[in-house]
Image (tube, rainbow, N blue to C red):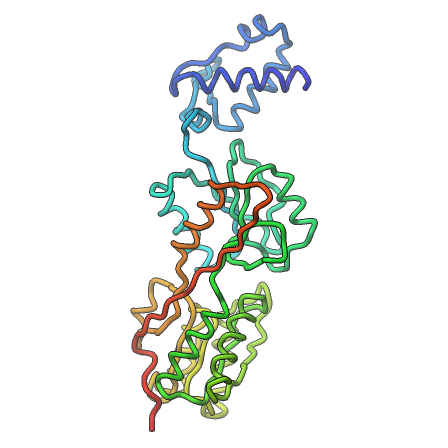
Length: 349
């Protein structure tokens, strides 16, 4: 450890012991006490300022900030939520859920938005980090990504992905079960000709939802058509699925009586396509989706959904971070629940 690093550590320890709002030592007093150059002191002070522990108060005076409280014994852990930088109602909802749970579950939250084209964040310039929750980017995680996250030296959880084959923690919705719940609901209403709309980029979550839906439906004698909208990573999924379904419905009436839309945001595009093509919901077409967007109940008609319990997923992620048992990896899956609204009804005779 060089002189600059030693001085930084010493000053940080002194800062943590001081009261927020108090005046910190002058550069001259630090130089005299530690027998170091002004450049060495300036370097250490700059690091502490960038970390938010110090701020300028006048030309020469430095003031201790409230951030020192994070480093004291008994302080709440600081967890970071890393989210791909991409406009998404889902990402916004997860972010809000972590914010709302922070006080109850006892943690402080930092949020980092990273390039959506990456699999995991590659830069985390945070002064204090006790745990990390990662929503991954567009591609499957590689061994190199795992090595990078391991090297951070803090516990981490992959959020929203089921990754039992990797030596890491993951929490996710049980996607196969979600699909099966949707199919069961439609089957109970008498629907036998079903379809599932691939309205999001291909991924293991979408594949698993489709698998669960098809398995239940086909085991119970239902036919299932898989409709591909051709949505790729980076596309506007709502617009693309709307345009695709509008074209299809304008050319011919649906051969199926009920449709499972794989995400709640794209279901709104399906609603619009049906409205413009004169297809009544649920009279001519039952629609069920997956998700828990706040406005599902305010659609016309209100949208039946298999809701993902994100509050429970947040609880599980935080529990794993606090538990932090080295070498014991958990892969938690949470069961979704059906909320029946007005977009599904018994099949027309």
